[in-house]
Length: 112
Image (tube, rainbow, N blue to C red; front, side, top):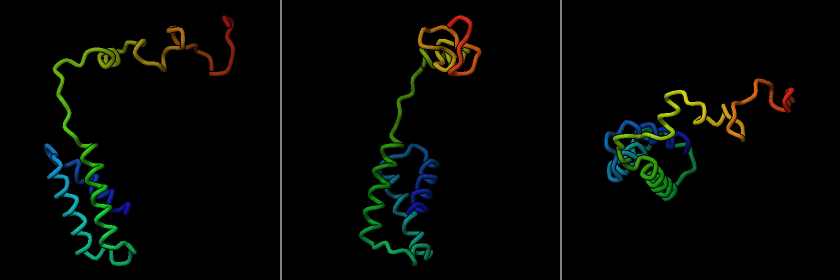
C-alpha cells in the first residue's frame, strides 16, 4: 500500500492543472499497471481492498492538489520575512516583541 501511495503521490505532482478526473485516471492507471506488472501478486489485498484504496487516494490527492488562487500582491507577513524584518519571525523575538536574548534557553541573564 505504501508503494502505491508513493507512486500516485509522486505522479500527481507532475500533473499540469490537476482536476479530479485527471487524478482519478492517473491513480487507476498506476494501480492497474502495478497489477499487470505483478507487483501486487504476493500481497493479501483483494480487488475490493484495491478499490477502496484507490478511492481514498483519489479523495486525498484531490483535496491536496485543488486549484489555488494566484494573488497579485502577497503583501503582509510574507514580504516582511523576505525583507528580513525580525518582527515577522517568531524565532527572533520573545513574548514581549523584543529581540531574542543571546544566552541559551533556560539560563538567566544579568537583566533577568
